[in-house]
Image 1 (cartoon, one colour):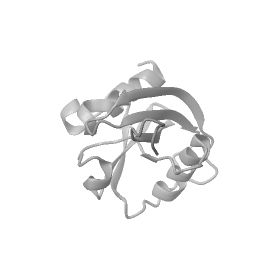
Image 2 (cartoon, rainbow, N blue to C red; image 1 turned 180 degrees about the vertical axis):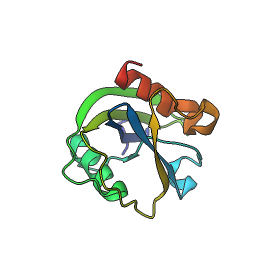
Image 3 (spheres, helix red, strand yellow; image 1 turned 90 degrees about the vertical axis):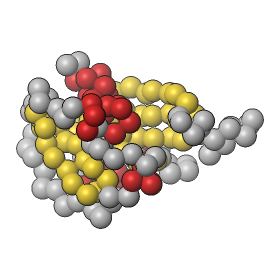
Image 4 (cartoon, rainbow, N blue to C red; image 1 turned 60 degrees about the vertical axis):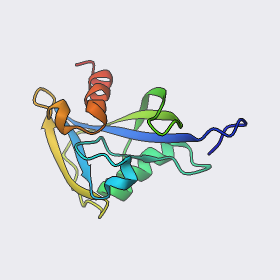
Length: 142
């Protein structure tokens, strides 16, 4: 997507999936699709053209992790200029589950893991210099 001035805009949705005091993080198979980043991410993807960000969050959980009928709520929106000079608008969602869902990961997801909120992976093992950790902290107020 481009602004009137021709600048590229990327709309992104990510979801902090919580079960009690645990959060799910994923590693993606195709690092190129995720800004050549490796490490742990919150489940995320670009919002498709014309797609409502709420629908994108639900789609991401369903497509990547087979979590259907998820209830998501928007926590906050963040904006910044990425390394590629594009303007990122990120919709941070939260999904609280009463039970650990039965996950069937897609081929896009290399691995997923539940982490206790008090034992998250180190910043060095988290994509984008620990961005998921900052988001988790913001969403959960930890």
